[in-house]
Length: 251
Figure (cartoon, rainbow, N blue to C red):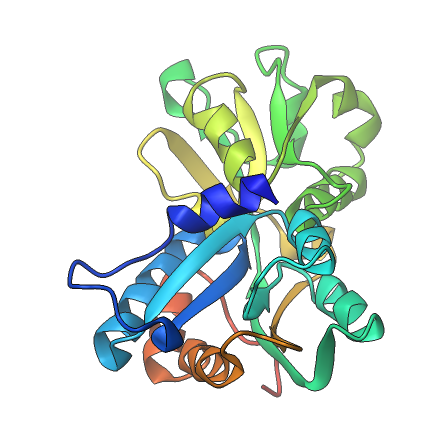
């Protein structure tokens, strides 16, 4: 809980005076959303005058914090499975679940290291001594990365090189700092100066169907629902599209 409270304290806040308490919501969001949701949060605040406080982390860890009573209004997961677990445990309602995007993987390389990995098979090169992915135990993008490496037929060979980030953002940081020569992370966060990146063939991993839900007992369920609608509305979708998310077919 202490870690969550620290994360909440550093959330998204407008420069103007703080709005009334009843115009503030807390959103627990998967780490791949940090760039996109920060932009969406700012746009939502400008339009509504409300304040959005974010706590970013791995979907599995955020789910546990919610189960332990963290005061969260909205949960945005990198995999709908974690949302459905909360529904099954009576902490969320099925008709409040919304899909908001399909997540995609990127293969990233440390620019200063002189490598530009284009295909998973190139991770077998001896120059690649460390490969970072998010921890598959609680991070959906880590699961997807392992699936992609397995489907490419190289998981057994590269596994000794793999280092695990607590979430997909930390996995990217390992490559940004040169502590890993390459990695597989969310496409939505891969466009940073320190790395080069290419999209991973989507046939190599199961689609990352990302979902959000307003939680039962949310301190401000109405405002949380408005934020969810904003994410999937015209302004929110434009931002999500910018970061490489699309909606599943039929949505």
